[in-house]
Image 1 (spheres, one colour):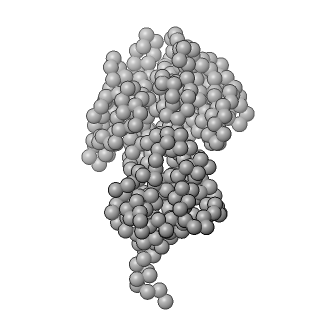
Image 2: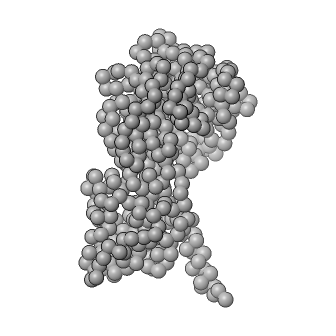
Image 3: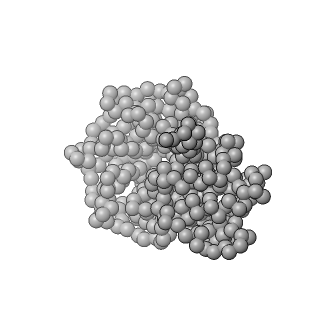
Length: 421
């Protein structure tokens, strides 16, 4: 028969597993017994995105009473998903923790838990700016902020970015010598090897594009002259492009998003750099375009996100940076204005985090703002660690584990001392 104490302990463990990302910042976490902590850390359902965060939480617990807890590490470290770490991370940060113990062998670092916990998609932000060094940021659930996860050297910018089969696809854009691209460049996130795929029919800078099922749809853009109204579709499986019916407007720097298998295009700049307030919708099944209700204001390079069946168009550019925000109801084909941003900017990456819209970055800013729909206001959150225009992708967490652990070694970050009192 289960005692009330045992039941209470199991309930506490279940609560800790479900709320691990928040709990590891609390004083309560520092006072767990080794036995309780082991049960928490071994759970497949541990609510955390990145295994490095689990290791850092363990280090925080260990540093709180280092002298007495040193001997417990040989029991707790194998509870980590060690197969998710880069080998260099294990050599640099984990093995030294066990080196002082008698009869130490690497067998304690062998685990059957090679797969990620409760596999999930993690949000990554990839710098899409003129800078040659491209940072990848990830959202840290426990700190509730974006942190550097990886970096790589890449000269292109102003591209459309997608994740497919654990690879990043960079579509169009331009190089540092202002050469416009018609290329699709593929970066394998597991091997970090590059490959060039089939080319578009036109060089497209400042294009807008979406991924729908296994196909990338690219719209508008320019090649240094007047903007295009053309559109084309890339089939990822066959590595082939095909032309689509043209948009009703010539535009570059527009926003685009998929809603209920239809593609909506918002604003952008037209001929003579005139900002647009027009909206149009492409139906891939019927292969036709239709016009939608115009926005209240014209804007180029807006952020676009969907929450609860509504499309939010955020910030942008119109003879200067905008802080205005509008909300579109696709069912009613109507717009309404909502509270403006605190910081005007264009090139925002608009995404949904924890069921709230976030306006991340933008031209020359570190700013992150979160929309409180109940009170209709924007709240500034922890700023980005590197400023600029970003593109967002979602990546399986086992990919993030490898990237983050590789990056931690690369920057020579002494994680073992991070949570020292």
